[in-house]
Structures are given as structure tokens and as C-alpha cells.
Image (cartoon, rainbow, N blue to C red; front, side):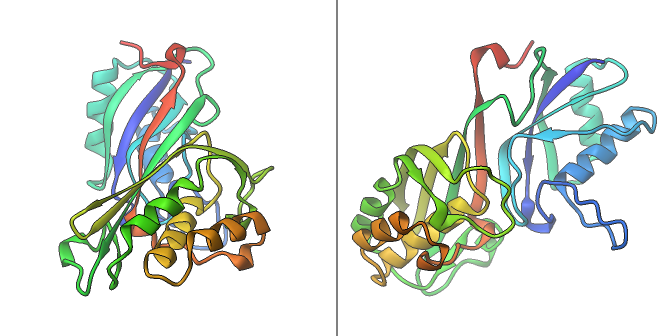
Length: 258
């Protein structure tokens, strides 16, 4: 059957995450994958279509560059597929690009790296227009200490101290290639890139950056907590609303087909 890949953007506020949840004895929950599969089912003549996503974003997490792959029982020109899906999907999900997928392409298994961004507003009051897309703390953070702490995560580490309950990862070892903080006025913008992440890993990193920035911990304390491989030694995660999946990278052979 013809195979396709999509680049998706969504506002995760009103979703229970990316992944469809099968709960036979409970009311259905709204997920991005569920909405996309429902729209594709209509295009497939009521035939179920299973979608793979590059990242299983949690409830409340947003995306600018989520990637999905699937097969359809009939062929579509990619622009027509994009238009059809955007006509069926709810307003908080949009297909930014559609393309034929190369042979063997899988949105998650073929991914080389993912880039996430967390935005955190600081100071006494957060603008109401920011509350759906940025976390908030009432403090002024120490920018130098936060940047020093962010640099600790670059490289290959065992992130067992950041692992959340409910994760299904076989190993807690991950390699981070980018961990960078910028302050844009009163907003902290944190970007982190890796080949893969544990559940709530980025939000847990931001939780540590917040505690360092407000003086509750020092960078060296975070280093020791990381080495402890004990979740009880780690600060709680930052709110989901500030996190966005920005981009997923693939090998050139898996590039979008024209």
C-alpha cells in the first residue's frame, strides 16, 4: 500500500498526549494520534489506519514538527492529502507538510534526533496570553547558574534519576548533543536535542534548572543527583504547557520525497 509521512503542529493543551489510549471500559480520551487516525479512517473508506509518531508527547505538550507515518489503501497526491486532512482535523492540529515515505520509513524508528524547546516565564505575574504555551515561576532566576547547569547534561549519561513512573524504556542511558539556555527578557528558553528521551525527561531537566536558578540547589548538587541514579534525589518536573517538540531529524535517505 502507498506509504506517507506528515509533519504536524498541534496545541497540546486539550489533548491527553499524542498516543491513542485503548480503554474499553472507560470513556475515550482525546489524543493527537486518535484524531489523526479518525481522519485517515474517513479517507480510507472506513478502513482503520494505524499511525506511528516520532515522539509520544505527554498531555499538554505541544508540537511544531511532529512526524507521523502510515499506509493508505489508495494513493493520494501529497498536497491533496494535506488539504483533505486539514479539512477533517480539529483546529488545534494541522498538517504542515505531506509526502510519500521512502521504503521502510518509520516515524519513530527511523528518527536520528529530536529537538525540544521549553519556555518559562519568570517574575511576579505571567501574561494570561502566555499561560497555555509557557511555564511560569514567580522568581528572577540566576542566568549564569542556569546556563552552567544546562551544560552538565551534554554527552552520554545515565538519566535514571529523571526517569518517571510509567516509562517503557529498556535503558535510561541517553546522549544529549545540545543543552542550551537563553534568556529573552523575562523568559527562559531552553533547547535540548538527543537521539531519544525518557518520559518527562525534558520537563525534569527544566525542574532542576528552576531550582538552581532560584538558589535552592547549586550546579554541583544537580551533578551529584544525576550520578545518584535515584528519582527521589531529583526535583519535580516543570509543567507540560511550556514544552514543544520543535523538530525531528532523519538521515538524507529518509528525506521528504517530492
